[in-house]
Structure formats: C-alpha cells, structure tokens
Length: 142
Length: 142
Length: 142
Length: 142
Image 1 (cartoon, each protein chain N blue to C red):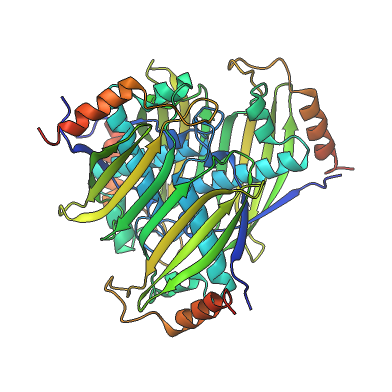
Image 2: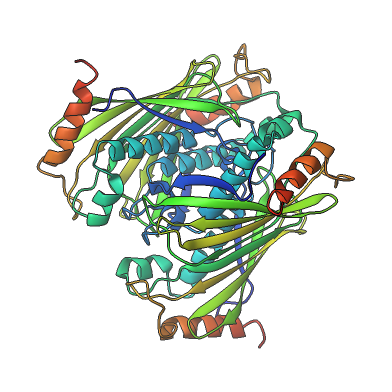
C-alpha cells in the first residue's frame, strides 16, 4: 500500500531558472504535474494509458501556488503529494516543495475534473480512479 | 495614457499543447507572465532593465488560475490584464483569457513582491513602479 | 504572393532565459517552430488543421542550430525563414535569427518528413503542400 | 571512475508531448542538457557552481538532433552520453536516446565553448574541466 504523502524528488535544472537566477514560477506547476503523473503510475492508473484510450480525461480546472523561498539551479527538491478531496467527478491534490534544508520553499494545489472524450463533464469519477484515490487518501489517516 | 484593461494577444502554438490535445495548464502561466512583461514595457518600467540592474526584483509570491474552456492549437487568445491591488511592497494582477469566440477560457491572478538584490523584502515599492501602477490602475475608473 | 524570406518577430521573454543570463539554447528551437507555424498559416496550410484532421503529419527528422551571439531578456529578434529543399516526402527550412543590431545571433535548420496517420512514411508530400512550398521557394529567385 | 557512456534515464511526461501525440522535438534538447548537467555533477564539476561563481561559462555553440522513432507519453527513455571531442576551449558531447524496446529513438550532439564572465572566448578550458573530461573520455577506450 502506498503511504501518504507520496514522495517525488527532482533536481532543479538550468532550464528551470531564469535571468533573475531563480526558478521561473510557472515551472513549479510542471514539476507538480510530474509528481501527479508519478503518483498516478504508482496507484496503478497511469495518466498516459487514460489519455491514449481517450475515454477518461482529467483536465485541471484550478491550479495555484505560493512561493515562500527561492529555488535555485542545482537544488534537490522533495515534493510531498496528498489527495485532499475526492468529489463526485473531481479531486484535489496538495503539494509541498521542500528545499535541501528541508524548509518549505513552495506549496501548490490542483483540482482535476473528469470529462468524457467529447469534452462533456463525466457523470462520476471512474470506479478504478475512485478506489485508488480513496485507498491512498485513507492511508493518511489509518 | 494606457487604458485598462491592457490587451495582449497570442496564438496558441503546438508546444503549448499536450497529447490530450489541449493547452498544458502550466503554460497558461507563461502566457500570463508574457502579458505582464508586455505591460511593464508599456508602462515604461521594463522588467529586463530591473533584472539587469539587479536592484529591483519582483518575484511572484502567489499564482493561481481557473480553467473554464479548453484552448486548442491555433487558437487566437486575447489576454486582458488589470492591476487589482497595490500594497506597500507588493501588487496583484488579474488576467482574463478570451478565446476567439470571445468566451472566457481561463482567468489567472498573480501577486508580486518587491525584494532587494540580497533577497530581503524591500521597504516599499520603488516610486517609479508605484507611480506607473497607480496611474494605470486609476485609468480603469476615471 | 509571399515574399521570401518570410519574416517572423518575437521578444525574448524571461522564461526564455536561464540563470546564466542568456537564452537557454533549446528555446531557440521553440521559436524556430513558432516561425514555421506562422509561415504555414501564411501559406494557407495551417499546421493545426493538419494535426486536427490527423491525415497529414510533418514530424521533424532533423534539427540543428548554431549560436553566434548571446540573446538576452528583452531582445527583439527577427527570424528570416526560407525553404531550402523540397524532396519527395520531406522538406527543409533555414532560419536566421537577427538581434536588434541586425547581427546574426543564431541560425537553425529543420527537416520535416510527411508521414501517414499510422506513422508510416507518406508516399509523397500532399499536393497542396508541394504547391504552397514550391511557390514560396521560387519567390526567392524570380 | 565513471564508465562511459554515462547513463541518464527519464520518463516522458505529458508536458513533453504535443497535440500530435509525440515528443515535441525541441524538448529532446532539454533532456540532453539535463543529461549533461547530471554528467557534470558526476564528474565533480557541477554546472550550477560554475554559473554561480560566474567565472566559467560553457554556452552551446552548436546543437543538433536526429529523430528516428517517435517518443510517446509515459515512455521510459535511457540516454547514453559520451564526450566525443576535447579541444582547446571547446568540447563536444554525443547522446543516444533509447526507447523501452532499446531501439535508438533519437541521437543528439552538442558543442560547448568556454567563455569568460565578460563573454569573451576563454584562453583555454579550465584545467579541472579538462582533467575531468579527459579521464571520462578515456574510460571509453581503456
């Protein structure tokens, strides 16, 4: 069983930075999504399979981030991911980005909604997704 | 005098999309920042000059977006930018992304804080910035 | 009739740069592809229509660039695009990137090959593409 | 001692793909540079330290890639990196990208030149760099 929070790590690369010498803020969202993809694979419901099959799409309807400490080129960053909410056809994730001194450099939050192949809202989350998310979510408490 | 909202337009390119056939969400923030850079130049306070001089840095402390309609490859997008708040050492911008049918495809919000070259919080916004922002902000009302 | 070279312009944004204070080299290819997309639209054969229809795909089989002068945040860059070769099922483009002093900052070269929806090599370039490319190519000489 | 080729692995993420359902070609160069950064750290000469110190910069003067097989979302890619040339003030790297069936999906080649902080060409490669590169280069033969 996966233990929550799910841990994903990465090294901040040159292309993540900008001329101000720090992480360009938008790239934090790219890393958050990498962590999400990694989690989905660990849950046995890889995103690439869903997109290839074209039946289940999980586009973001909301994304936000708070930046507390600058992140620099070469920093080893740990991302802690939790599922914070499971609704009828949507779910929310929270991300904590820790720098190498184990300080919170940033946090992020994303909300994903299941839609059908034609773009209409899904009746409800796919049962396999709901089961996987619920099991992972509960591992936080029990 | 600049009229608010400030208008910035772009065409959604192939690299903005992903295998799900839509805008990859994180790239919306890149376009928001492009609109912000464009506005700063129009205000006579180009970001590149500030970063090159190294005295005034305006990193983001918060960013968020809501996604209402998918954006696709080739879409002509209009961004309407307003300054929504001017505080002592920070300011906030709001962005409305309109698709070619003039529907709201997404909105975004960013908060920027002025810091010194050493990373410490600035005493207050640089006077030239405050003046430029205030004049632009007020053009919305008067 | 389009005159060759085709001109595409852009401003180098913060996210194009890295902590070394210059354009991150890989982003030059993104701008080259933007210029290519722009040209395709001008030729009446927009890339997004082809990808949406799914019958004609033009993936790159080769890309290269030479970097002569650094490009910096805020630089206004002009890209001059020419079609240098039209073969049976492939074509090649050349890009010259001029900085604001009208010096050659970089050059790039891409080769694209037409494939079918199933990934197999196309028998030949689509007639509309061949006609559009040939007309544009010849405008360089006549 | 590091054995050549140096191996770097990554999973192709959603943001690496485009609406045509494949890797957007320019992102291959981003991954090549990630592999280069990883190698530099393994050699004891991390790029971030050089850029932070500002004395030794290694901008690319040439980059090229050939694309043999499409790479898709979720693909596990192995990059094999070798140093192919060490000149007075420049060096060249070669990258082979293998897909999960261990087929060559792409190859890339980059040439880097050492410059001084003021942008002028360096007299010669820094001795620590030359030593590290030469040792790694020779591990291919001996």
